[in-house]
Amino acid sequence: MCLPAPAQTAGDPVAVTARPIDRFRIAASETRFGALEFRGGFSYRSGDRRLAGVSAFRFREPGAAFLAVTDTGFWLTGEIRRDATGRPTGMSEVRIAPILSRTGEPQTRKGDADAEGLAIRDGEALVSFERTHRVESFANADAPFLSRPRPVQQPIPRRELRGNGGLETIAVSPANSPLRGAAVVVAERSVDRSGNLLAAILPNRTFSVRRTDPWAVTDGAFLPDGDLVLLERRYEGLGRIGMRLRRIPGDTIQAGALVDGPVLMEADFGNEIDNMEGLDVWQDAGGATMLSVVSDDNGSFLQRNLYLEFRLLDEPAD
Image 1: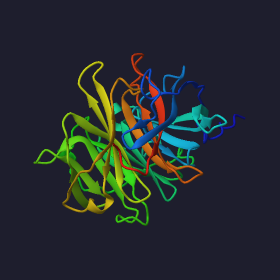
Image 2: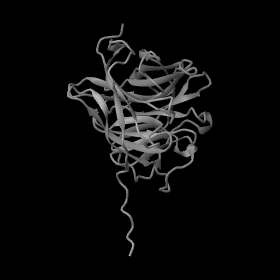
Image 3: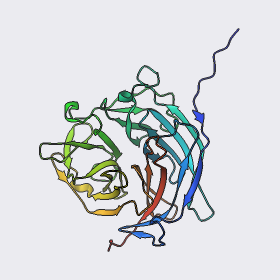
Image 4: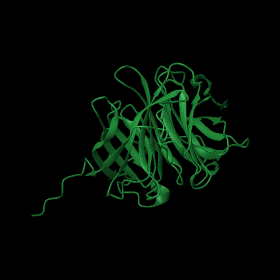
């Protein structure tokens, strides 16, 4: 008698190699960049071609175990490996599995599988998708591989969202912040009649984020005080790529508002950046607020997968 194969709950193991990045500015030793201090990072790669297109990243344990999604329809889990001083050096225990559809099948069409944003709330993983624009919830963010999604209401009409510029960001506010734990979505390049980015407080309130051409929002995460940090990307042709981080005051995020805020840091190809797509905020053992940023290599040998860490400084930037 043939017995059924055991259910795959842990995903497939993936071998990952990494190269530490000790300096953020290429060939320079400075560590301060705007309101942030560079704390370390690494580039990583794998022979498994599924490990490409990482578009969003969230810690399940501060600075250690993480969950990520790819824009090709996969979950990625693992842990950040660190040296004796606490600096990040690579990944371990990496596993990958397809994001299932509502029928329990892997999503093979790009339009259905294009996961762009990820947030964790009350043990569930919230994922925003573009092309087939939607937000879905998956049970058990610690092990979502077998979870079938349920739809999450969001008020931005699908017809207003661009095919490849939709709901790029989803983030959950702190429970003690002005938004009281509500989730927020921000579009990458879809704009309102005034040319500003469409955004919403789930489930039913809309607002706008001031857009500055040529920047596009690729992710966001809330600081402990309730302010929202947006990760933005600039692409103006090969070699003309930029990254910046903008801080939106949390008390300004309200229905009908147009929000904006100061730039915390801006970087270009003189720094160790690539196609920066994912952001998370966490606090280390000493209480410092940390920002982790990851890139999407688009499966191209011309690009890199990066993981970078910065500490938010208390004093204002020069």
